[in-house]
Structures are given as structure tokens and as C-alpha cells.
Length: 370
Image (cartoon, rainbow, N blue to C red; front, side, top):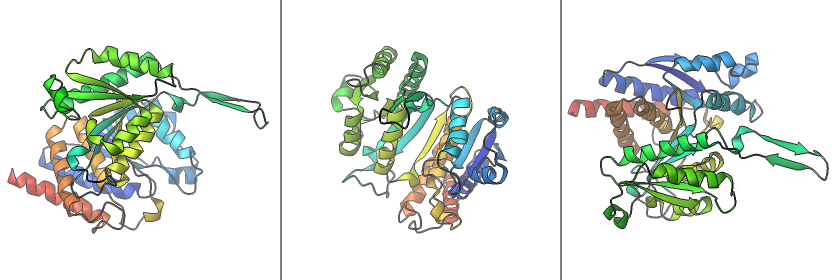
């Protein structure tokens, strides 16, 4: 397996170094061979050479089995340039049409929600990643006048919607094949359901786009009779994420709503320091990353939390089919989180590199015990 490693900017290289440390250890223990190529697609190269991500470089990423990314964004580069011409270019050119965000609360991690337990926050958000408002389709008329009109188009094809929804149902089956029955009430379990997919939309206002989403949702859902179908408006989803997150198993939604609700979800699970994510092309090359960004104020201080980056490495292993190794790394992350004083940078009780070392120690200890 060939892995492209893009450390990126700010604290990105620091957290990716710890993710690679954990990956190297768990792969050695499970006889897995991964080969890494470190690529300098970042803000520093843009400043020094004026280069973003070229078409040839993006096509070259198709030679890899996965991409591990730190963070992109540089304080000396105008916001939007690097994000558009590196991150979004990868997402669209590699057709990474699923953004997958596991939302889970680890033990010993403080959530701002009152009296929640780890079993209360354990769900997935499946966000469509290539359509909707984020395609950049739109126009101005009479720009810079008092009559100016700006139009941004929310565009979806049935193909885009269907493949995203089908992925969500497959995830619900996968998550609940061990009879975990996440997100279901006692009554729903008695009715024979093993999992649930919630469509997050706004059918009462976005009457074209989410009419399409809802129709396809029910059509595809009929192929999964043991998965409960649930529709909730996006504003109510935000309420339930705070008031009753245990009702969710898998949430599927469009690009903009997914962008918003996953940030809210990350805060409920204890913050961006523990939140990994994946930009997936299930038939091609997928990219895995921590969600927290470059955190430039902490660059070079060895104080940033690498747990989300190590979690991204865990998602990468799971995606590539190394289930046992992925489970082992998840257990090691849980062990280390129990020892940490906080998930906030500089308040963890350990340095960035010490967190990576603790993950390796936990991996080795559990392996010996098994």
C-alpha cells in the first residue's frame, strides 16, 4: 500500500508526525506494510515558488491507496487560495464524494453538554462532498450598484444524491452488524430494526433540491428493510445534537448542511482536537485528516493535540481493510485519552510527541497481552 503524506502548514506536520509514529507501530505489530511519500503541497511552497496543486500532481495522487493530510492554510496567504486550489481541487478532481465524520465522545473528554456519557454520543455524519452550493455556480448582476443581485446555485444530480445515500445505508448496516442497534428506541428494536439513517434536510423551504433527496432516500431505503428511515429538518437536527444526541446512528445530508452540523457535532464530542474526518472516494483515492486546522499560534511549540490526526490514521486503516489494526489503534487512543488532563492545546498534561509515545506504548502493551 502506498500512502501520500501531506503535512501541510502550521501544526499540520507536527500532528502528522505523531500519526505516522502510531501507524508505523501498529503496522509492525500486525504485519502490514505501508510505504509513505511525503509531499510538500502547502502554503510554504506557494509562497516560495508560486505553485499550488497542479493538474499533473493531482492526477499523480491517483497512484496512491490513500492520502494522510495534516492541515492546509498559511497566515501569509490570503484565506481561500490554498483551500480552493489544494483542498477543494483534490476533493473534486479525485471525486471524493463522501465526507465522513465519526462523532464519538471518549471517556475522560469533557463535552459542553450536561450529563452526557460516551454511549450517548456515538454516530456518523455522511456529508455529500462534491455538489450543492459548493460547486461555485452562480452569478452577479448589476454588481457594485444599489440594484446588485448575487445568485449562488445549489445543484445536485440524482447520481450524486443516490450514491451518497446508499453509502449512508451501508454504513448503518456495517455499524450495527454486531447488534449494537445504535440510535434506536426500544420500540424500534422490537419492530426488528438494527440501525437508523436520518436524512437531514429542509424540504419545507428548499423544495426542489430536498424533494430530490427525500425521494431518493426512501427509494434506496426500501432496499434496506432492517434500517429505520428518519427525516429531520436541519434546524431540528441541531437541536437534537444538543438535547438528545443518542437518537442518531447515521445522519446523511448535503454539502452545506453537513459542513455546519459537523462543526457543532465536533464541539459536543469535546472539540476539534479529537475530531478526525475522511474525504472518501470508495472506488478511488480517499484522504484522511484531523479537523482542527493549522493552529498557527501553536506551531513549533510541541503543545498541539495530535489525537485527531492519530484518529485520522485509524480511519485510514479501517478504510483500507485493516480492521484488526484499526481496532487496536482505536483502543490505544482511548487508553491515552483517559490519561490526558484536557484535549485543549497546551493543557493536555503531555507534549505533542509524548502523546504519540503513549499511543505506541499502549499498542505494544495490548499486543503483548493478546
